Image 1 (cartoon, rainbow, N blue to C red):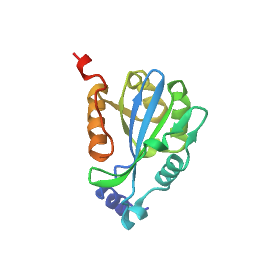
Image 2: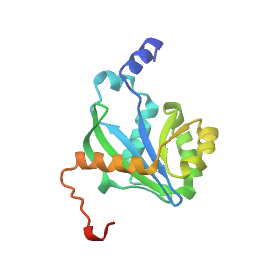
Image 3: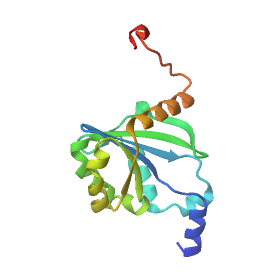
Image 4: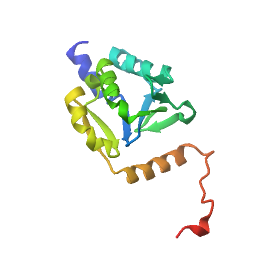
Length: 172
């Protein structure tokens, strides 16, 4: 790809791939946004690394010994930042963080992503590992604020869900 093509690709707003993580004490949860509205120009610009990452994350339902994609949670046809696509949810035991970082490095994820949004205590605990092993920064966010925003997002994009308090009188 020539320099002018790279500039054009960046002008398309292609800050892909989009990931978010909640790194807890037991489980790490990863969400991946897979755009479905890729234009022919973007297809031409898309790096082989990104195609490989997308294929790996969306065509598998198991990763290593403890990683699983929760296909029943997948949200299709969602719009984020004026892009339409699917949200994929992947989880693995936090004790396998070393394996995850090795896989991220092997798949070339660090060549495409410089910062990953993260919540949970593990965002602090593993910050140095992300920086040292895959040259990525963790943009840390408050877990409860993020949870509420996530629930609101899910509620807006999934009209079939209903949330209620089972014993509302017991709430003080």
